[in-house]
Amino acid sequence: MIIASSIVLIVTSLLMVVLVLMHKGKGGGLSDMFGGGISSSLGGSSVVERNLDRLTIAVGVLWFASIVALGLLFKGDA
Image (cartoon, rainbow, N blue to C red; front, side):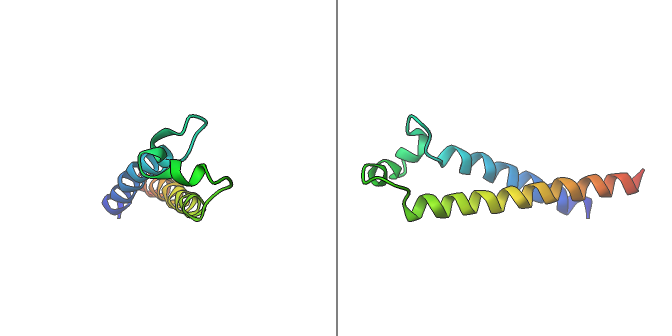
């Protein structure tokens, strides 16, 4: 169980890094490389940005849950 939780933590950590870098910042960021600059010229947040926000939140919740699970597993192990 500890190995599975550790793998989930590693995968979600990498996904969080990628998803956060894809978000549009003040200067555009990496999201411009993937077509985010096109929708930003139209004004407002696009469907892609809202879906990226939802995906980032979902991965963040899963990341947090895996940290809590690992903490509880290691506490019970000691």
